Length: 206
Image 1 (cartoon, rainbow, N blue to C red):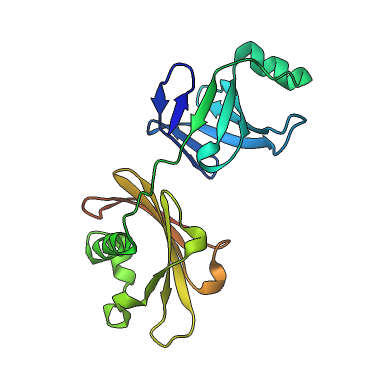
Image 2 (image 1 turned 30 degrees about the horizontal axis):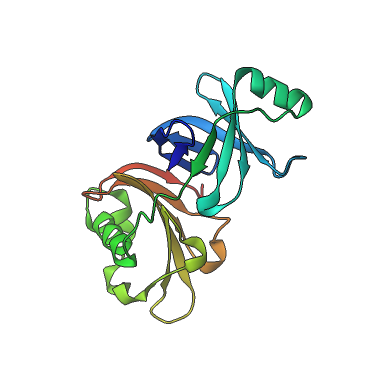
């Protein structure tokens, strides 16, 4: 959650692999321009669909993350000579975990793969599936993201599945084999959270 320190106006921001959604509208891309400038700010440049550019000067982390916005003249001046503007500070606070538990993510995965209308349902051999073989990977789980590992029944090897919540929809990325995570995902699909229907699917191994 973002809130203007002076005006108190709130909005919800979601940063994910170069895409930025503000109040669930995906019309921005972003890039970290510099990790530390001369004033200690991390500089993030944001580009809208209409190519209009703004930037954030970020300091702090977690629930103490704050930003100054750079727009129009202040944007041009900062990138010309490094002048930091006197502007409204935006305070950021994590919006809480999107997942109540591992079971919630596993329930969704099972719902998706039991729906015969979904292409991914054809790839599951239920005789090789045991629900208690899932476990949470703490290092990859926070906020909107839940990372799970599924161990093979034999105990050797396994696979990873990442769930990223976007409100009513969830992006699921699967990694076949332990060694494939995190660089080589095999498939990514977006599903309706309510009924597990796949609305978009991308094969990443071709």
